[in-house]
Length: 257
Length: 219
Image 1 (tube, chains in turn blue, yellow):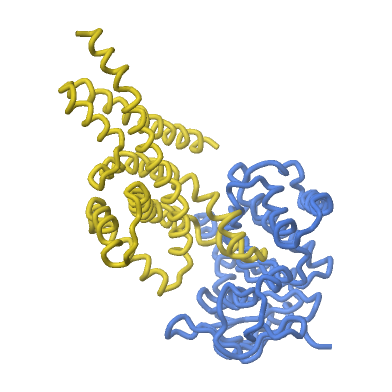
Image 2 (image 1 turned 45 degrees about the horizontal axis):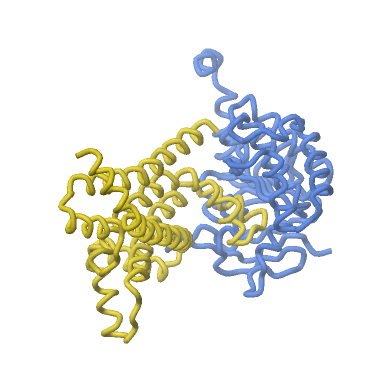
């Protein structure tokens, strides 16, 4: 069986600077892949290339067997199959929650309002925000906005969901409600590509961890082996930084908290 | 004195009204063209296409650097000479005001669009919106609040600047007033009427602009 998503020798430049260097990555349908790595390693760029927000500069990229880098690619069609959730939610501020959710289904997919609305409301209920149906984004907390943003993508019935550091802008107490939603999607068997700095979450949700640095994939393995015995020194060093706070001496720990 | 002033006004009213009609027609059409052109300019200017941006920049600088009056003369006297194309003075005024206004409104629209978070564009694209849908449903509606007050301010400038059309032969409200003054020497009275005329057109516009700004500040 061929992979749902297939990067091969994938390159991307920002001007002179090469941000992705011959990336090879395959994601099977139903797989949850978490991409880790230091800031600027190219992990967000990799996601953005997958739905055409960034242009590729070489190599190949396939979605469900279809070559995406050819000249005939209809990105509008691809984007309906590849949902994306951003760090800063980016809900449409002039629209109520339900209008945010229905814009794509009605205008892009030309679906029936009743059917699209029923789906949107069911998904809202699932993330616990049905009562916010007619609220405006500015009336919602960051965690609520991010859950709405996830639902906005889900309403398009995508094959894949991309999560680009979706909890990085949230207060700690709101991180949980967003991660729970993502974990629910993973449990349902949805294909997910997740970029995050939440290590415990990555370990819990991932089928596979991909560790990137400086535009390259350094290692890929199942979460247990990655977190207990990373194969590369760079990954070990990366993980040490995250466990630093947890392993601080008690007094210092107190001062920090 | 008072009764003769009222008499004069009553007698002059049809002539003034005719001129006012010209002023209002030129201004209204200029505003319509300025708005349509300005939105088009703003959208084109935010596409990130280099060649388009250079062309728009040249257009903008031409209208910023050259006085509207010179543009009026250029179009009114230049088109017949260089292109054997003769346009009535009324339409010359509409054309020049429209093009000038579009450059002004266009910069406001561009600025308003550019001030939206970049993520709005990306979020719209990522649910599969076309460029037209992205601007129509996501970007322009949100830019509207930022661009309306300064745009209405430009409208008042278009109304006031329309008086330059006198110089290419349009008999607008000011020209009509001058004709009456030439006949009657009642300059203070007639200019007083013109003062009120422009005030009562432009003041409601800027009041509306402020009201919209206030209302949107709370919504």
